[in-house]
Length: 345
Image 1 (tube, rainbow, N blue to C red):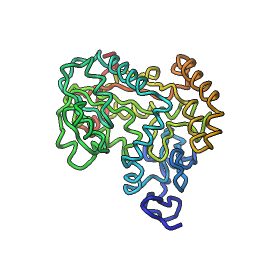
Image 2 (image 1 turned 120 degrees about the vertical axis):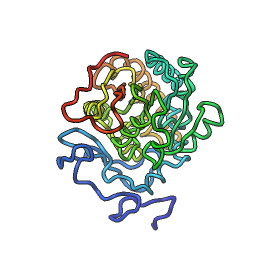
Image 3 (image 1 turned 45 degrees about the vertical axis):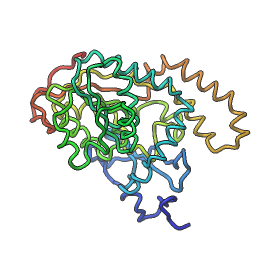
């Protein structure tokens, strides 16, 4: 079948929707790569198969071959995001999502009252909406590659809306030094260059400001147990899954003391429910109806075992809070420079 804008054939050798396959790790340059996952698009069942490779030296996991800018734009169109949100709503209710946002904001309320806050990858800006309860005097802005952030502006959830990435040409320069806090909740997974996004985040932070990064943990035991049905693999949307040790080391290399590393509260109790829902997504309606008791059981296990999962290797996410050192301008600290000791905010 010929390639069309609606059905990209992403398995051909010279496919414009994919870049050439990498032979080295994009994080450390190692050539010790192994294929961790091969899977089609689990939500839309588009043609083609996506691969996630893992570095044998630093454990960085990444999509390989990676989507090209054209492919990335195609798979991140707003209608795809809406379909993903509809699927997620089957697993996590809007009330549950809002409760999680409030819990996250409550934990961050230990930070000094910020004047300005940028939420990167904000989507519909549900986090800024929830966080205003704990930071009533803070000005929240949002940045997102989709039109959702512009709708959030119209609905009053952010005061300024910026469309794109921090690495979009001119974006970091325009926002340089404007914010006391920058949050990235499950944003780095989508960034073509996570390191460049981190440097740009530091550029828009004021000296002494805080960077909060929450990402999927590729070391999660559910990734091995569930394989292609593990929702956080997020193919084809997730380009990078950064291990906790790598992210800490990178922030410290940039001269930013890490204040908090949290593996418990970021865990989202949906792994089993999402895996079963994905596997049934295109089954006959009668099969889906017959599987309702299994879905109820999976949901019960996710919720009932969450206190255990979040304190073990089954935790599916982690959060890091770092502080921008006054001397940091987005470039690495000189070799041998001390970056301070971790403290609690």
